[in-house]
Length: 76
Image 1: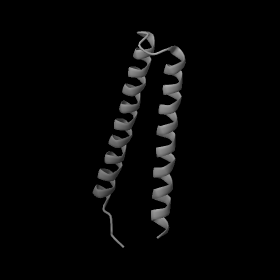
Image 2: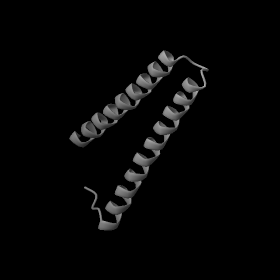
Image 3: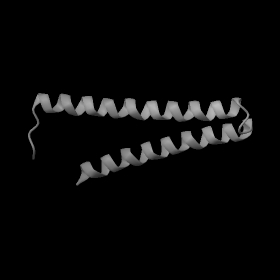
């Protein structure tokens, strides 16, 4: 078993927070790009909504997959 010091736990929490911020920023950027394409009529409104739903589904699915992976790795 590896002993963790308070400093190590702080670094781990900070890196986790950075990852959450990066993921939120990429989601926001991609969603903004999709909305911009829809409002400039490069894609239709229906296609814009479909792409937004697909993007949300991808982020939710990969989030669930990562959570399950972390839970399984703690079991071993």
